[in-house]
Length: 82
Image (cartoon, rainbow, N blue to C red; front, side):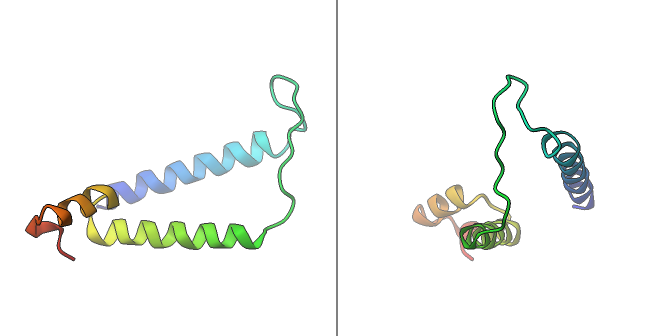
C-alpha cells in the first residue's frame, strides 16, 4: 500500500532528524552519563544490515511475519506455502 510507504518515509525522516539533531550533537545523556558512539562502520554492521534487508524483503514479499509463516507451514495451511 502506498500509504504504508508514506508512513515509513515519514518515520525514517523523523528518526534521522532526531538522531542527528539531538543525539549526535550531545556529549552527555540527560542524566549526565557519557555518550560513546562507534566512530566507524565495522564488518559486523554490514552483516547485520544485510540480514535485516533479507528478513524485511522476505516479510514484504510473503506478506506474513516470519514466525506465524513458519507455524502456518508446520500446520499445513495452504496460504502459507511460498
